[in-house]
Image 1 (cartoon, rainbow, N blue to C red):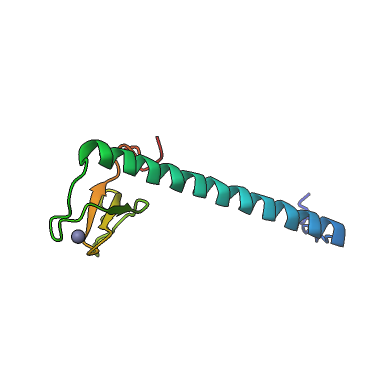
Image 2 (cartoon, rainbow, N blue to C red):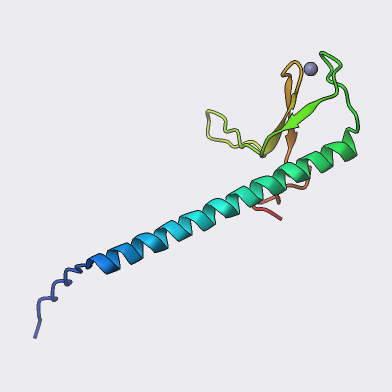
Length: 116
Ligand SMILES: [Zn+2]
């Protein structure tokens, strides 16, 4: 005998369940946010360490100031869809000249794009 599959029951949440779900969502979101802030901090610290090791007190080639600011790694994609290796920006704090350093070469990210 072939039976018609029973329709899936409608799940009705009461207020308590709804607020419990909302609280879980909020907590997860907060944890994700903290995780990403922590990773960003690690990237910045790693980038600064790497630059201090490789560049030392390197002056800006355009204005000769020695004051650099680093940002977290970015990924730049070409119009044809190819994605460049992730790189972090290094900006001269005086004239704004910005250059990019390969984040994999600097040891901030693993080859496959994940953190090491
Ligand atoms: Zn400069």
